[in-house]
Image 1 (tube, rainbow, N blue to C red):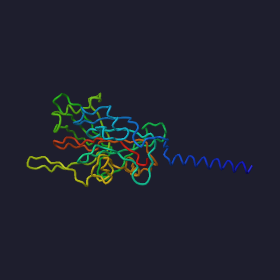
Image 2: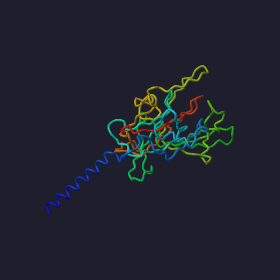
Image 3: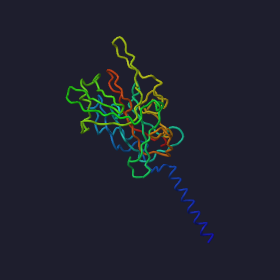
Image 4: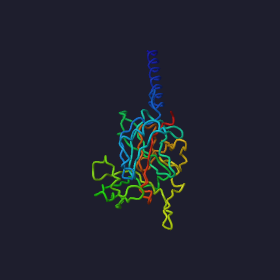
Length: 291
């Protein structure tokens, strides 16, 4: 009897070891890719690149961001892409994954959200958590903007937000009228985006009828995609390295996620900067830094 119990304990012990091994490996199947494998959803927010943004551009967010590939336009505040890896990305020491973006002279920061695949169905249908950046406490959370389609070819896109403000997008550099900024795949006459709104990126240092807009180097220092001024920015590949340990919930409390499967990258600055127009993010994929 004692021999049978001993054997049973051994079986249970080695079964637990196997489970822990799989868990520590993050359910990483053999042959999995270090890069994004699937894009689940993509919506462009009003901006000057609306006629260039195509639904098929999601291919530019999948796989390795080689030089012969393009990028994915997200547009103004709220535009986003939801994508996933083909395995769990582990939360380890330091940076865990990297989001690639269009390399430019100034930051056009996007907030990154993460989600685990707790139910194991391979779909991003659970809870999104924000990755905290240096401007988290100075941001507006659960902020929304509703854009209204221009009423004519010579009219502007109007908007209202969760703070009761209203306004319109005005053309500067690019199309003469913002009626051309409405993304054709949007079937309705209005669209609402919800997310974290970061502080304005650019300061207006214009003078003597000469426009001069600049992003202070200490405004966005870590925690965002398309942030060329970040301490987490890798110049050679144009990516920002992000740490899953910076995950927070809707009220800013830290969340301990052992791993994540899905990412959401969303344009997070709601600002028009004169002839530069809207602050809009362009992204090129993501990579698991542990593979």
